[in-house]
Picture 1 (cartoon, rainbow, N blue to C red):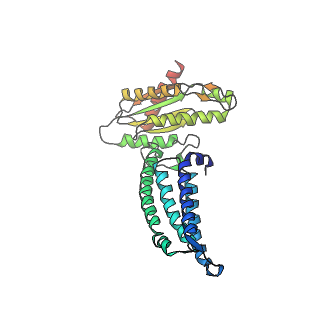
Picture 2 (cartoon, rainbow, N blue to C red):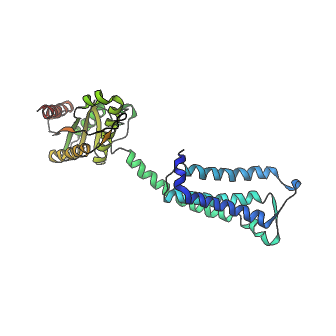
Length: 299
């Protein structure tokens, strides 16, 4: 629940208020109050619950979703449904004059219209969730195994990467793949100066930059400490180096604000890339790319 969203929904709140005021005005303005003995409290309990629940659904929608087409359709559809529920509730308190008796005959029509609008909104919500689920897949090459996920970055650990590289090496077709290892420069010094909490935040933000730079078929894992490893199927060495350079440039322009001092700190990456060879094994290609990375860092 996020109450700060309510001010962003002023128009929808006004729509809900208009439906509420219209239901009260029509029912009590065109009808005459029943005597106490004529009121059926059991009906009021059932119909009042429906009206109250429809209003609570609208409230939770407004404090749970940002403005947008889906949110508007859901709220408007529920407002029509609430309008019918309120008319149904209020006619337990009033007798309608003959001229206004049509209200009791048509009180279910707004509910039908509201259900139609909500059906459209739920379909759009379904489409929205499909898009979000695709983004949450993290562009990984197979299903998530939660016991192999790093808690800080939410990326897979190195063991999972080894299994995926092994699968690529066992593929019998002629497709090529490349491995990239990225290392955050002077990360130990950053942890000493600003603390491990900020260090963890840096790891998370850099992992997000890496993920946004990858294709759907690529895989990113946290290799160890401040090191990340990428598996790039159907990618030659030149393309792998180009992608790693793009990630390095994106990280270089990231202004990281420390928690206590609010100081802007910029980070750089060192990377190395290797393309798989016909006689490669998992440890052989990983060892080769790590040696290249160490040479690049200390040259």
